[in-house]
Image (cartoon, rainbow, N blue to C red; front, side):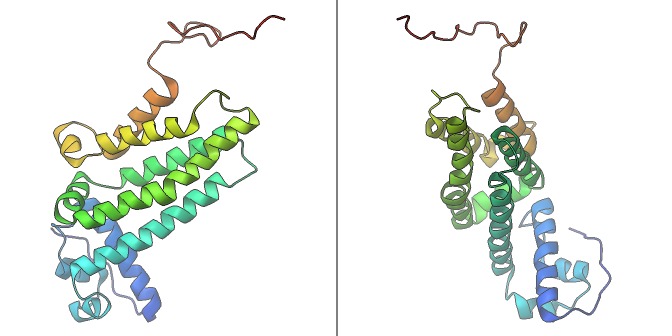
Length: 220
């Protein structure tokens, strides 16, 4: 794989390490783990191979550092979104899903496949991160929406989230993605559209074909 060479600049050690991580993330996500070599990465960064190996002894350790940094960044972004009390619940939930969609759009099929097949422990780390860190954040928004009356009070929020993430997890299987004409972001957008907005065509005044009428309270 050929990469576009970036002109070399003199950077303090901390800045250079961060630059290596950021550029490596871009290239790993775009081209996959297998196709990118340390030689190509050093050339792209405009640094010597010896300098690159001084920070990261091999490609796997570099990817692990990239994924650890990525998890921290993703978590900080999502926390800022869901805990922004200036926005209503719907706006926060929408922003949350849009961020996830943008993030997934940067993951190529090659990267998803490599991570799942060649580095299964790293794939498992990402799944654990999703369940233990990302999942509770969106749960906060759903439950807050129920309390504030912005989301149906009879919605089982936890069941809804389990169902939503189960669909995402099942369809984000790299074998499924590779065999179908969807990018990760397109797939997530389709799941969101179906789960949040349903499959029925709106008729009028917000009524949906086939929807049962709302239950009325008991007459006294």
